[in-house]
Length: 177
Figure 1 (cartoon, rainbow, N blue to C red):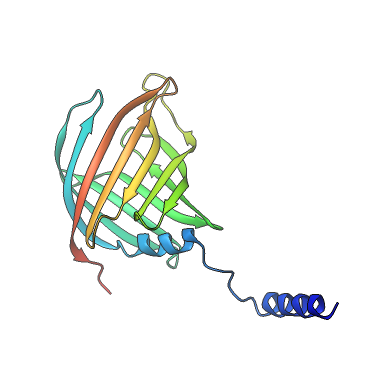
Figure 2 (figure 1 turned 30 degrees about the vertical axis):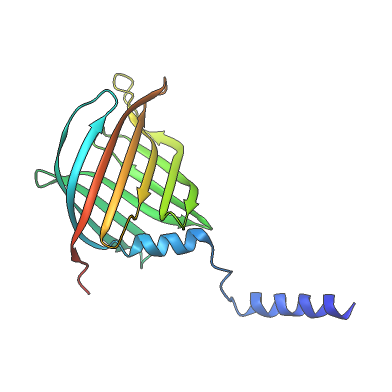
């Protein structure tokens, strides 16, 4: 009986002191995402039904007292797409403000710390145009090495898989302190 009472006492003290919960894979990978803050440049390439490629820039910055990371993908000097990443408990979530003028919301379905990647799947999407139903329904972010980043947007349409946009980025400047 005494060990159970001790355990209850320890839990009570931890709750009363508001000590943080154990760090999760989501916490650790979100910290890694926050480390992207700065300026990046690279290339994009479309495949599977849509052919286009080119150069782009990206900026990452923190907002919400460090609780969210904002990603702006910039083409021809204009932000074309913005994504906001944040934690929801132990889960990593993202809302993607797409050039298609819709807003898919995704949740990390797989976090692989050893492969340094996070795979997201669609939760829901707002503002889908009935005439042009394309939207991001899957996303993969990979950290292949320091100061390099790979992004892969998978598009769906409600009737099946659509094209894929792959982006490769390299850091050109760290965030200003």
